Length: 237
Image (cartoon, rainbow, N blue to C red; front, top):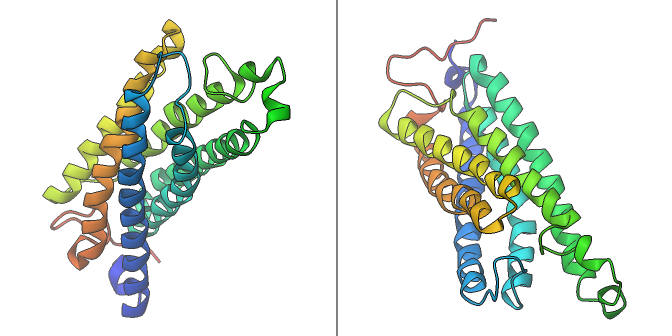
């Protein structure tokens, strides 16, 4: 019995909708994030200091909204693949959940506390809750995106294959994860300009993969994801 045959049409419709909404949400918020990201770099006085407002606060809010949608997309993928590939997607969901928990905690803390006058006056503020390297929050955010995000998308690479659409998703996820990990070179070199390589992976390449994922979820023939033509998606009962 295939995954498709095991589910009712209503279940499949709900599965597709959840995947499409999650993927489209990731695309929309990523596109919205791109504007303050670009403007933040344009107005950045030095690579070693944080972005200035309003771009900084806009990015914080968008990341807090984006991260849960990325977890939802990972869950949708997990639910749409053949059973044999679910260990990979389960690991992806876990890693993406860790990423979202860390980054939402970091960005909510920075957003709510960094604008307080009493907090801003603390002598150790720059070492704790700013994105001026080195700081605790900056380090945690790098851990979230350059490690756990990278692990999450790389776990999906073995899942996709078969159709041209799924192969394209596979390549984009691989590139996204590799670029995110490459951003760790900025930590090793103590140069946050180098770390921006990772931003390309999760802010540019990953949203493109999400566009293709939305298309895959919207196409009945591409469910279960990762199952190519003539490839069995059967499960043993």
